[in-house]
Image 1 (cartoon, helix red, strand yellow):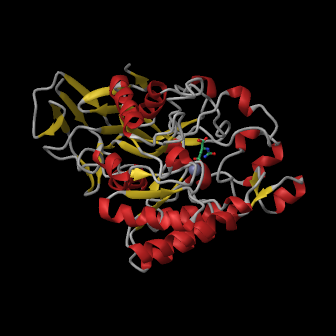
Image 2 (cartoon, protein in one colour):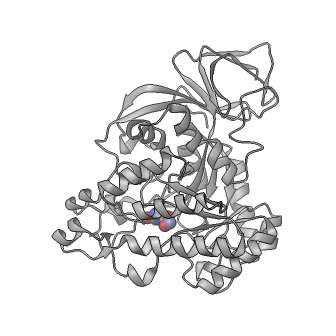
Image 3 (tube, rainbow, N blue to C red):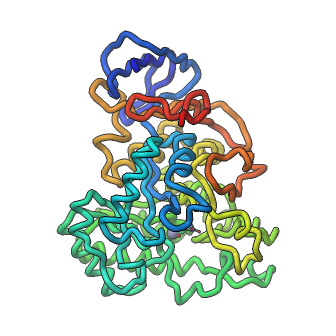
Length: 421
Ligand code: NCD
Ligand code: ZN
């Protein structure tokens, strides 16, 4: 298909401009004889989004999500690449499972699925996975996400190997000795409700520990779903010291607070928990000044029955792929180009995908594109989500900015808001 995209505002790393975009053979070209022309007047044309943190649930929990349904949700959210989290069953801790996930992603054909692998075997926190073999198989990010690596000695070794192999450790920062039985942020709201709390300190201690391990080893670290003001401050200081650290924040941590737990609804239960307005503002500030590099969804589908349980028995997590742009544009007071940066080329670089995603919109680049209406105002309807689970916390929250088309290797995965397969 030769495609001509006219009238849109192109935004990429080089800036913002009004140009027509020509696509042929899966790439941006100087000029082509179009088979299809899209009128993008009033729309933004940008490199496709890259999610650093997607739980696809396959293998093991296909009742909540599959690689196909999660990829479809991603495409509808403007994503052309996603990093699949390894807390599957079996765990993505060896080449065979990683290859399975990648292959299923290719078969679904809705976005590029890049599996991450766990840091420890079975995410048990005791024995490192075969990093070299997994790196050879194309894995760039390693994480025990769902859990942090508790043992500092093991984590030190992980960073030392990572340094030699050119891979990145991505940490879910939670000192478990401080969070046992917790269902929400430890603070005033939690005390009123009489619920067991997850203190900010449990995250900040591990952020601090890993920053010091980065200083010691020289290996890069990526901090997953940062949620507290102090965590943002620690990363800001580490970057000022020139350390190779990067960080992400989720749509929910930049928009929602622990007050929502007054409903006792497990829809609002997530790890790390929703924090206070001060924390939300610190996360927004971190995104605005580049301390936090990327918005990552932490798309965590769970079947409805489990989310209807009492708070202490429900699993943590929220879906996010289809609403991320809408939340970001509605809640961030940042130039649109900076918001797109946090969704596209900055996460692409962290995932090591800069050759194929987040590329400048210029001849020769692969045609992986998102086209969205920055002025659209909408609300999410859970039953309409393409994800197999509908545990979204954004019902009733005004969203701004909606994906119209997503293009992967020059083909529509989403056209006029409809998934193409
Ligand atoms: C995630 C999940 O459900 O796998 N849950 C969550 O609350 N974020 C795990 C995780 O990202 O820590
Ligand atoms: Zn996590």
